[in-house]
Structure formats: structure tokens, C-alpha cells
Length: 307
Image (cartoon, rainbow, N blue to C red; front, top):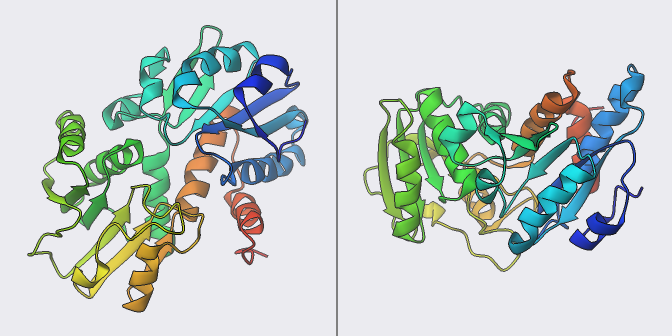
């Protein structure tokens, strides 16, 4: 089977996927480098373990209204694992049989693991964000000041991870106040003493501390014409900027950070780290994250990070 193709619900209905199939599911999904990344890691696993000889990872574009039907078909076609991205991370909660404790707290799942009766849900986004901030910006979440932009599935995972990691303060901004209340309701069930403040995206809080990190979890930046979700000029000079979007590699938000000489990074490291954790859940084996990162860089036409 062609692992570079973008498959559809029709393909899922009519095509047999042999061996042990895995997939990323989203809408849109054409931009995803997850297949290249995971298939590179599987190739490394095959070098020392023949158990992975027939494992392969695919890409599926499934609209929200078709997701419930697709999930039944994925199970029927024996897909061992699924990664979920926009817009399925929250929707899946009502369609799966079991949810891990952290994913339940986050109110979203990004990783599904098959068993005989259906799929169990996990969330590796929080772990991926935490590791990405440490690797790219030298920012441990513990005791950090964080501005989080957005309130969807990725933002929920990030907010819960901030609480679990012991952030000093969390500021959450969104375009619609109603969605912010949904996120705050999720956080009510998470233990922690971190202070949480909300704001409208067009108006950053005035009394920000000298240092911190901005994390963009909105979709603003996926399209070249998208504006930056906030005005980076309003940040104190000690702040750093992390955009979960990795394709394009430099969004308007990161362009603004660069113009101000603020340290910045895109979400490629988060993608790799959450992906490695997902593959470990499916394979019960240690995964080579360096191979995944290099494959992702190759797909994005970037220089490899590791020789």
C-alpha cells in the first residue's frame, strides 16, 4: 500500500489494509508529515525486531460528520492505532470505550489503541508540548509563566499539562469567550494551585511578568494569509514564543517573534515527541525520535537535525 497517499472514507470502505496498519486522521490532513515520521521510526524498529515487518502508517482525510462511521470501519479493518488531529480530538471522546486519566482531564484524545471491542483513548499532546518546550526553548513548564492561545483539543491538553507540571501562572486567550468557559470547566477537575486568567486575543493582559512563554494552540497560521493571533510587540522582552503549527514552518506569529529577536520555535518538536509516545503505546518498544525528526524535516524540505 502507498503510505504517501491521502486516503478517504471511500478507500476505507473498499480497500483491505494488510499487515498491521496505523493512521493519522484529520480534516484537512494533506499537510501532515506524520506518515513519513512514523514509517521512518518503524523502519528503525524493523532493523532489530521482525515483529514490525508488516507495520505501516497511513493518512486519512475524514470529515467530522463521517468520523463515527470511519471509526467503526477502522476497527473492522484492524487498524491497531490511530492518531487524531483537528477536528476529531474532542469528538472522539463520545465514540470510544475507554479513556486514560490524563486524557479525561484534558477533555481530548489524540491517540487510539485498538482492542477486541473498540478503541481506548490516550493523549500524548501534553507530553509532546512539555518535551518540545524543553528541547527547543529550554523552558521547563514547572514554575513557568505561560500564555496559551486557543481553547480547542490541543489547548485543553496544553492547559492540563501546565497544571500537572506546576506552572506558576497561566493566561488563556481565545477569540470567543464562550469557548474559554468550556476550557475552564475542563480545568476545574484538575488538581493544582496555579493561577488562571483569561483574556481576549486582541487584548493581552497589561501586567505580564518579565519572562514567560507564549504557546499558540489556535489554527491561525495554517494558511499563509492568516494573521498572527496576538500582537507580539505587546510582550515583554523576556518572553519566548512557541507555535504548535509546524507546517508552514514559520507562521506570522513566529515572524513577529523573529522581528523582535525573541526566541521562538514551531511545533515540529511537539509533533515528534507526541508521535514517539504514541508509537510506544502501540508497539511497546522504545522509539527512535531522532529518526522521526529527520524524516519530518525531509518532508518539509528542511535540513536534518541529526546526522
